[in-house]
Amino acid sequence: MTQQTVTRRHFLKTAGASALVFPTIVPATAIAKPGRTLPNSRVNLGFIGVGNMGTGHLRSFLGYDDVHVISACDVRKEHRDRAKTMVDEKYGDSQCRTYNNHVELLRDPDLDAVLIASPDHWHVLQGIDTARHGKAMYYEKPASYTVEEAQMLRREINRYNPIFQFGTQQRSNSRFRHALELIRNGRIGQLEHITLGSASFQAVPDQPEEPVPDGLDYERWLGPAPYKPYNTLRCTRNWTVIRDYSLGCISGAWGIHHVDIAQWTNDADDTGPISVEGTGSIPDGLYDTYQRFEVEHRYANGVKLTHIDHITAMQKHPFYQELDGGNSMGILFEGDEGWIYVARNYIDSNPKSLLREVIGPNEFKLPVSNDHRRNFIESVKKGTHPICPVGPGVKSEIVCQQAEIAMRLGRKLRWDNSTETFIDDPEANALLSSPMREPWKLPA
Image (tube, rainbow, N blue to C red; front, side, top):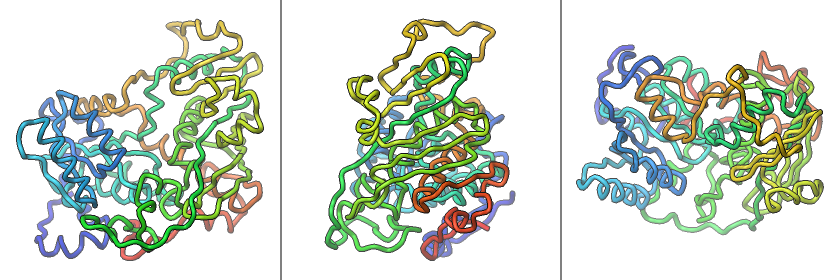
């Protein structure tokens, strides 16, 4: 890649028009990528999105001695100011840089890595920009708004090869890892059925238009999403269940976490199901993603994957009421010789003795990570791949996309994993992409 010289006037004119402003700004030798270690022992970290999720990450990273947070970007001034206060108080100075436009943050040559915790519909554009500016990234779920976006993200990450950690942090949870190793080593016999208990939400009525509050760049918050008048609920954390910005609980609002674990358990990080069918209901009002759903995927090896919201799980599958104090948001793995149920703070099995078993030195073992953020930082410092790189992240996202499309069409769909398209179904394939609001667009 070659260095470009760009005037500030040209930058300010074009930065809002496309997420792909400077595709060749960073020399290849400067990219934080696998195989290249940092020239120093401390990671200079920036944040794109410092709302609720981003602030939670910020608090954690400020506790790491080998991380120096140097910048924060958010379209809300109050979020930027809050982040700057936290960072400056931590370091006892006033050096934290703040931005309204993520491209300006990415141009900083001092920056090694970023954490992306913006609304779902911005993830892909900001992830591609981050790769093209040579920065490592911790990339919050979901991977994308559409299958096409997920594929484009994977293409650009593979092209520029920055270190990429997908935010499915259950891969760094010891309970899930123990359950998966037991299953992959045959402790429940032949795996037959995986049931995911996902989230749901309470419907709210349509909201009246409100004035855009001072300090919010609402045009940039909307970005590639369709224009809709502002209201407070639209731009709070629950945008994850508004279809203009997210697929809801089937994906980014919860489901992607469990789908990722199901894929990992079924040794499907490089592939996915071959068919999908399901039903669901969308409430009236502002929150217009699937509130209730039950979807069935089938893999080529015969494993069935059922993805179900936790309210329906409680109503239709009383078994869930007997586990984890009635929490129906875990994963049930059933084999022909037993079962294991695992959630973030709970694990159970039949027979009970399974959980006391130790994986032997010659048996299959998963990579060990007990802290997803820590795993990312160590990968950046050492130039190694983190526990959830872009390939598995995209494949898990595609499973979620399959489910949402099958419910929208109301029929069984067959999937070709080699082409990542539905088989003999132009109507379904037309839903693999969605136009962005001008002037935003994906790269060619």
